Length: 229
Image 1 (cartoon, helix red, strand yellow):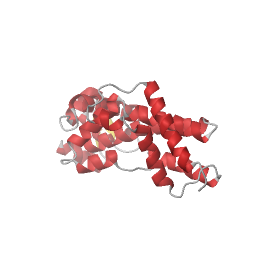
Image 2: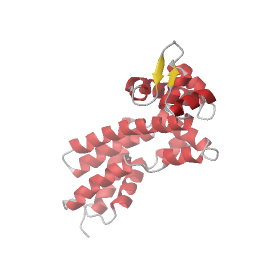
Image 3: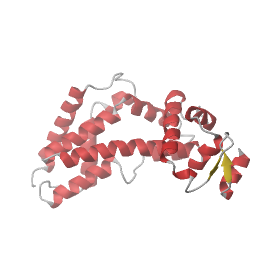
Image 4: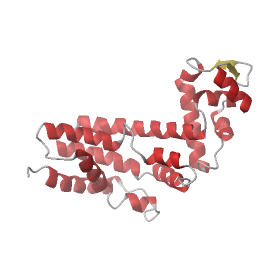
């Protein structure tokens, strides 16, 4: 392991176990298919065994790559978990942005956005991931902070940007779009998220239940912020 890391740091070639070598950097480190292969394997291992019980050796075996290869792409297990969270979040946010952009009214946009977020946040795999991170938060505080903390492309940032646009156009009347965005997300997930997280709701909410919840939340939101005061 130490030898592998030293070779990585020096930029030397690393054997992949089949007699071939991979150069660290722009050649080996930029193969998107290989990178995704490792991320997909990590997802399987983390969801199956949890963060703490999963080793880089297990991820390596699941991905079908060598130790040398995996360390070309990721420095350690936390780095890999961070990238897994980022890629999963980016996929959801991309879909949520498409929903915002496709809508013709503010009500429709916020409703479609809310349904995407609530559906994801209450899904089995996301709830399981959140429980996993909460379980190791004391031992791995940076991991938890990264998982739950803000980042440039989060649901809050996305909806805040949309609200800013509608305030500028005079369609909404909001003096603090950051706070309003948080309130909208809380309204949309009201009655679902904590129950799912703590096991009081074993099954994912149905599409009909999510739609009803989000619609009621958007109604409340627009009743206040859609009126000029």
